[in-house]
Length: 171
Ligand SMILES: [Cu+2]
Image 1 (cartoon, rainbow, N blue to C red):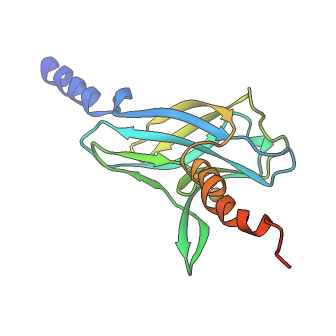
Image 2: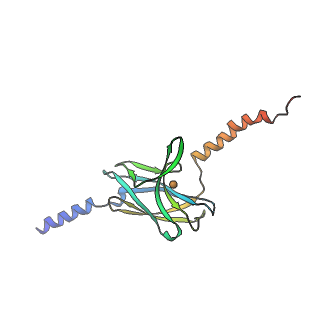
Image 3: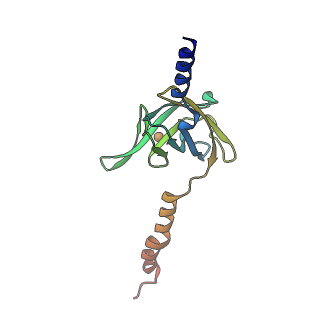
């Protein structure tokens, strides 16, 4: 009897949350001006388990600094990019969810003090399986694909088009 109980406890232990089931990669918070109405946290959430997971809540170590923390997704609606509050973020079994500008993000709304570059935001992520993960997200200036594409566009397309206009008009 004792053995059976022990075995079932061990089974429960192996079924319950394994820390490595969910892994956070490259967490960061977007730097924003000090009067910004909001900023956001981004990261990659990797699900190494065989079960679909949901991120159901995100909180910060200093909740008094924000009016509210929400899970958001930016989607195109009626030809406009809109941020829509989400009840959860799905992370498929064996898959990953990338939180990035223009997509899924954790919205840090109405900060009293906007976190600065060099600081970090301590987040706690709660999942539908009851597990929690603490994440330290350094504040960084936005860079990468979107900004890079915009700069490229300005450098080549618009600039070249603009050039002929700058030539003096013939009279
Ligand atoms: Cu948002």
